[in-house]
Every structure is written in C-alpha cells, then in structure tokens.
Amino acid sequence: MPSHSSRIYSLIAGLLVALLAHGNCLAAKSSGGGGMTVVIDAGHGGHDRGGIPGQRIAEKDMTLDVALRLRNALSASGYNVVMTRDSDVFVPLGTRVAIANSYRNAIFVCVHFNATNRAGASGIETYFYSRDSLSLASAIHHYVTGGAPSGNRHVRRRGYYVLRKTTIPAVLVECGFLTNPTEAAYIQTASYRQKLAEEIAAGVSARNSVGGSLSTTRVATGETIPVQPYMDQTKVSSSERRSKRSHKKSARKKKKSSKPASSEAGSSSRNRES
Image: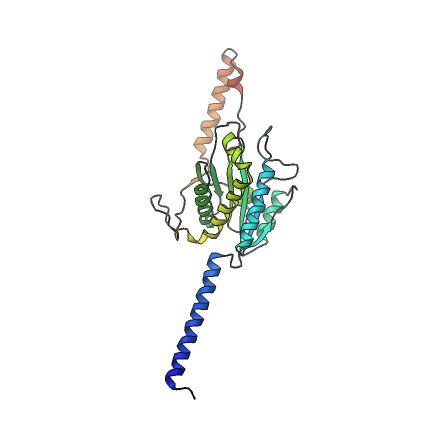
C-alpha cells in the first residue's frame, strides 16, 4: 500500500502534468486559429477587372491569386477560411457583406491593389471603418509594410461599403499600385504575391498583440505591435465643400472670360488612389 508521502508526490506530479497540458493547449490556440473564421474577399472578378480604364494588368487576377495563397497560409495555421470567391466570377458587394455577416466569430479581409493615372504613385495602405477593426488593420498594415519594399501610405478610416456594412472586424488592404512600373513588376512575380499573403496572415495572427496606445513612438516588439495612427477620410467639413464649389464656380467664370487655354487646363483627373 503506497505511503502517505508517495500519494502526495503522485498528486503533485499529476497536477504538474495537467498544468503543462493546459499551457500547451493555450499556446496552440494563441499561435493558431483557435476556432476563428477568416472571410477572405478577393476584390473584383468576372466582368469587373478593377483598376482604371486601359490598365494593362487586371486587378481581379492579382487579388484572387493573393487571396488563394492567403487561404492556404491561414488554413495551415488552423483558421477556418471562407472565400467570397475562389474563381474568376463577379460577386456583388451585398453578397460579399452577407457572407461575412453570416459568421459570428470571424474577421473579414479584403485584398485589393491600387491604380491611378499618376505612374509615380506607390505604397501600401490599409483601410478600416469600425473602431473594433483598428487593431486588425494595425497588425496587418504593420506586417505588410514591414515585408514589402513599397512605401507606407498608412492606415486610413473610410466608409467603403464592404467595411461599413459588415458587423465583424473588417479591413481592406491595398497591396501596392499596379500602375506603378516598379511595384507592378514585383506584384507580377509569384514569390512576391506569396510574400504578401504570408504577411497578411501574420497580421491576422497578431491582431490580439496590438497595444492600446496610439503613440507613434512606441517600439514594436515580438509581443506587442503599436496601434497605427490613421487618417480619417470619412468626413469632409461643410466649409471644405463650400470652398470646392466656390473654386469650381470661379474657375468656370475665368474660363468664359479668358482666351482658350490648353487642353491640359480643361482636363479632369479620374485617379483611383484609394
């Protein structure tokens, strides 16, 4: 019959094993999906090529490729992954939002690329709308800008339909300009698209490691990522609207009273830099 002391030792050993097993379980959940669902939205598709008129590289192809690579990376980390599209089909914005909102314990990640008539425009920017999406946007932007050779166009708050109408944390990542020759050359390589997918996946996994301060002086460590300062593009003041209208009126009056100017003066820009 075992002694009293041996029974105590056995009990202590059992408790230690249980604690170690519980710790390993928690570690696995923190490093992996832990039951989280990620809805990945590859921008555009089907008849909607994305970008601007005359753009050589179809945005819809690049977004789908990165989205599929992102799916593989997240699935390998234990996340449940749902795609709004996994082929070259057109999916209405309302349907994309409905898919995202049908999952409770989920986040929504939209993959896009930028375009503009100004070939020199470059960089990565990440959009969010609801306050509870800022940490996700901060983490993804931190990793993507850190792993890409492109410039940092910062985190921006904007009321895009797919961000404004979702009821779960949602972000939209513009992974560079397809109209910039240097960035387009990178984006057209499979290795770079794989890199983008891996960095977005790293940001998803680190979304709970974002610090609570908006300080720009905070240094990111392996455990903590600083909340990114953001540009709020959801509001335009009434004074700015009046200023723009008055500027347009004065420009029209000046044009009527002056001699014909060059065609450049009358041209209008249709850039899409966001």
